[in-house]
Length: 204
Image (cartoon, rainbow, N blue to C red; front, side):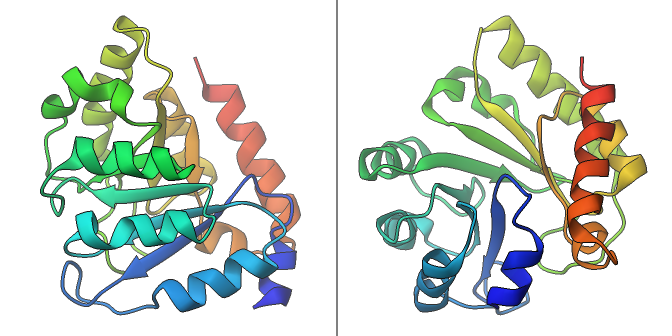
């Protein structure tokens, strides 16, 4: 694990997917392993909870010291209250939406979140192809955030590589989760630099 983390020391965050085999049909790990990653990672943790009942479980990840904790809008009973709890512990509060979930319900509460994650694949499995049909939703969100003067980060996750990061940046994303494109590269640090420069060229 330490070796893999060292390979991405040039990244801004390490994105950690937590799956419970209920909200998504896959099982990864829980707080104990995230705590170990937190202790050894050279960069801050961006934890993405693909789990049921995040209202109960998400604060524990913030208490572990994760820089950012993102839960799914579809799974949370009280998303604004949960975001406020995460912030009170000291983490950035993120909310994620699946490809088919509308974002309009978030417009009036944008400032309650530090980050909105627009999934560009169905959550649960790595290596899926980017869904370009999620871009209009991202663009709508970016336009609304700009109109309201919000500083919320707009993150995309799923199928992000050199060509798709350009599409996402043009649609308004400013934070990008890349898995296979980085860990599958011979030189992950160079891959990160290439993705970063590609995104910056296509950011408005």
